[in-house]
Amino acid sequence: MAVPKKKTSKSKSRKSHWYKKANLARQKSLSLAMSLLSNNSVSFVYNKSIIDLDG
Image (tube, rainbow, N blue to C red; front, side, top):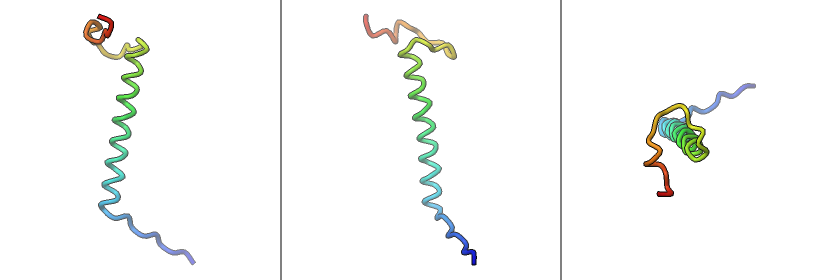
């Protein structure tokens, strides 16, 4: 006989939602950083003299 699953508590669902949002922000920032470091960034405008670490 089938048994219904227990409902996830509000705190656990909120925590899960927060982790998903944080993970998405982490992925975006890592992707942007990798794009800047590899000089393949074409989707936005930035000042290269500020980013340049050599001088």
